[in-house]
View (cartoon, helix red, strand yellow):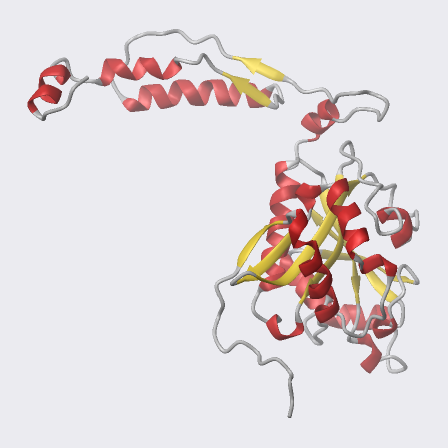
Length: 301
């Protein structure tokens, strides 16, 4: 009698969130279910996921349904040289530990992503990619980079080169379980690599993928970035001096707040500080007989 799990028949209610330390055994089990063709490896043990979580907890996400972890994604911030330099997975991830995480870097590197086989084609990877993209924008990083597998290439090896295969997948003439998902998420193929990572299913071919940050502000990144020997990173704070005057409409108040926000942004500030009681200006919008109305309604000031 077959014990193969059944594919869900309807769209599940999926929750995507950051890891907690107690999730790690479930992450390990999810990886094994997502990649049953991979042999047991030291890279995918509880100990390694604990080191990844310790290095950059904000960059690790999971997807769950009714408490079951059905997908996960790992990432770290790095500073990569130009495209002419060839990296290995070991170099970028610190041997899989994410010890190379650099808060002063400008690139979010998607180290790993996996979805249980029975939960694929439900948009789970798309939700995880969206979390990564949100993180990239929140940290004002220049781009998001990934090195994607090509598990569908084995069916076409000998008939076309890996570069030709990738071109056809990009053009929509062929589908690849990994590359197609990356393209739908918004990645662009920069080039095709050989021996970046070990993967029999891809014949050791992979793609260098990039997703630019459309909201990237390089001025803020230059201010925030700092050499590693510096204990703290620099930030720029804008303090608003608020003129407390009577106003007639909510729009007046909104325009004043917008002025301070836009001015702070023009100076590439990371924080805007306003007086604690700046909303007291709204009292002038209240009717003069408010006290009587409140008492009539049974309220007590």
